[in-house]
Amino acid sequence: MSYNIASIKAVKNGTRWTIREGYEALLDKISLDDLRSMANGKPYKLIKETKVRTVISIPGSDISDGGIYIKYFKRKGYSDYVKYLFTPTRTRTEWKVAGELLGKGINTALPLAIAEKRIWSLLDSSMLVTKAVPRSEPLMEYCQTTFNGILSGEKLAEKKKLLNDLAGFVRNIHEKGFFHNDLHTGNILIKFNNDYFSPAKDYTLYLMDLHHVKILKQLSKRKRLHNLAQLFNSLSSMLTKSDKLGFVKSYGINALDDIKNEQELTSQIESQSSRIRNVHYRSRLKRCMKESSNFSRKKINDMKMFLRKGYDTNSFLELIGKHHNALANNDKDVILKRDFKTALTRFPFKNGEIRSVVVKQYKTTCGLNLIKNIFRNSAGRKSWIAGNGLSVYGFNSARPLALIEKKVMGIVEDSYLIMEDAIHSLEMDRYILKNFHNQPLPGESKRKRTFINDFAKTIAIMHNRNVFHSDLKTCNIMVKEKDDKSFDFIFLDFDKVAFNEELSIRKRIKNLTQINLSTPGCITITDRFRFLREYLKQCNMADEKKTMLREIINISKTEKILYVSFKGDVTEDW
View 1 (spheres, rainbow, N blue to C red):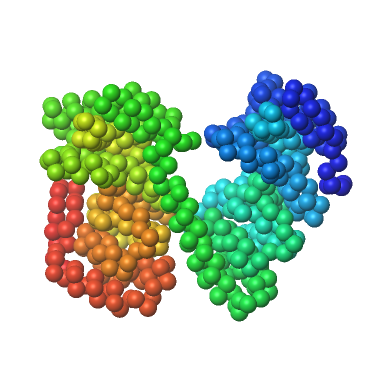
View 2 (view 1 turned 45 degrees about the horizontal axis):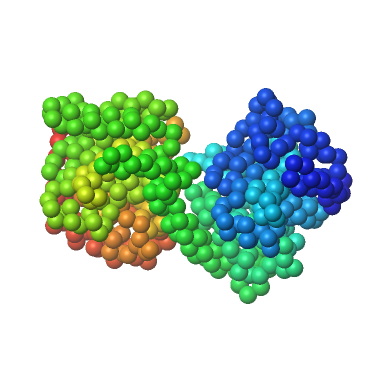
């Protein structure tokens, strides 16, 4: 079958169509003014909806047995009027690139039609219709579910084969002159050609989201490295050092002539991947303060509210009322903590998987703090940004649901952070006492080593991503044991979290010392050395071992171990 897109052109109701031959029926079945009319009572799935783009999947369409995808683009702003007078629309770019890719043997969804609506030659909206790719899912989702946690030998072999195939797929794209400016594994589909649960997976990779693709005569080293760094970044949670070297070897260093070996190329890709990740994180960090696809802003009397979409404003206001009533009545059943700076309460809250929430009140204790709030973010706002930021950076936290700021003459007086209660988890100091206090039973030593290694890896990833928690004690970390016997760690006390350009050795030592001084003594000196060794390995900082160990010991030996037990604060000598 030839993929040179033989097409017809038509105009209907002011909309200009380009339709692939054989699919002329689309003209009577889709209206750009009423996108969902295509479903015509049939089930459809909303894949994505933002201010400027809507993606719908219609399975089993009479246009195509495997179903179709519809991408609808709205005008961003008045600048688009000018822009698309001189440049092709995103839909027309995808149409052209898809034809070129398919013509050169690179898999992508078959484009069926594009439609553009203009008013006095100014673009108003546009649409792309493609065939669906059946029995497929984004490669990112497949990798996250398939290669999560501790892998068996069979899974490791499957992972190695997939990374080799992915490297060859990307090399082929580059060699044929295509540069995808947003090449992450969410924009690559994996299509299963046999049973999904078959031990021997037979699959094909597809390149998607083509309006970011440029067709070039030859790709420069810089563009190749950029694409490889994007892929490393999107797979950062599952790629080991060995995986990265294997991927680079499969891609081939001969594509970048001036690089001498796989280690050098891997190092360059990792460095660029880190820069991409930091730019990406920072661009998303303050989305929770804006009206966006996931968050809303509201103003109610003297209060300003920021909240996740899908939650009722009134329910949060009711929680603030319950919080104050509990404090007034000294209700010890719901009060978790109370001092002159903060007050925490817990209440039932049924919404989806959430069963209870915690309300944390940040009090303005003096006039000086009130003045400071004119020029800086309030403690509540810092927590709201940092709590959502932890999720952006890939860490578990007690998910913030809403921030409510009470203002006096436009200045923040008190603020309230409403967050999901971290149920099915336990503070780390108490978890250690409960599970590792006594002599280990058969099999428990392995569990303890897994706990220490998983924790060391988590802290290493946090520091490698330049996330700093200024009060990283075990009472501010929750532990959740997963079904596969690995561990998740959930971070609390968000107002102590900062996202730095680069984390210094001094700050790393501070965090490691805080952990050391707040960990119960049943975690032995041998366990602590094992933690530090794994941490340094994950950070590629083995050369700093002596320096960091000496500093941690020198600081720790001047203080006692202090942690929170089930009966209250406990101190221990070394």
